[in-house]
Length: 350
Image (tube, rainbow, N blue to C red; front, top):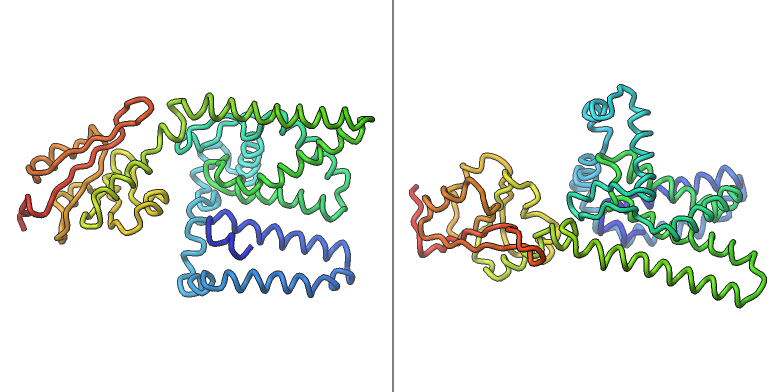
């Protein structure tokens, strides 16, 4: 738990799941619960020690702990979503968000279309049926600790990763549910196998089920999605931008002109991971103020859409600049253009 909190803000739901589960155990077991105090304390202490460096950072800059959560919280945009869903009721907004989040597993329509392209259901039909059987089992066994923990896990992710976040459903905020779904599918499969009489039948059904799940997912992802115009590899130029910046080297100052294409941005996680030493600025408005660049003695590169209205201006201000066009390797569509200006080839009028 301590390690996971380093990697993505959505992992913050895990402590919430555990706290709710501990409250459930306390209510269920009463005084018997306090026999668990020693192992729970050891567990939490170890998580705290691992997380301590990040905790110190958050202590010094408390606003950064909830910065992303505040940004994606639907409660911070109530008026916007009252208009979107045509209601003044916050409870109706949250219910709509909840149903849309649950629905993404049945019918798709993930908002990740804008980033990842995939619009189908987040779970294949065979695994979904098995998971629903597993869900029925844990509802029947609700007072058992393992079953209640699974249910708390599922609901917590749906609520905190879906209903309470803007533009639900968003698959990247629901990924923490995957292990619980796998466990539910396993429970469903186990229940079906229990009613089969012979080991041969059990083994045959298990093998057929696993092969079916593999073939369905292989077909959807590797045959359909990855080769479609909407696929991540087709739509997202971040990797290409990072490789391009690495080829230029650290002597360049980057200006990413986002005003005409918000998908292009320097602080995209992929770019920062692959090219961490490259310095750059995201220019989302008042682009004209950044051409020419101010107060820089570095080589420059402007990254912008191929048909940007600012490209002629760059030609005018930096006539010795060099254009480099990049296209989608799958469909040949124009992705972005890099306009490179070397320090020894221009003079900026002060």
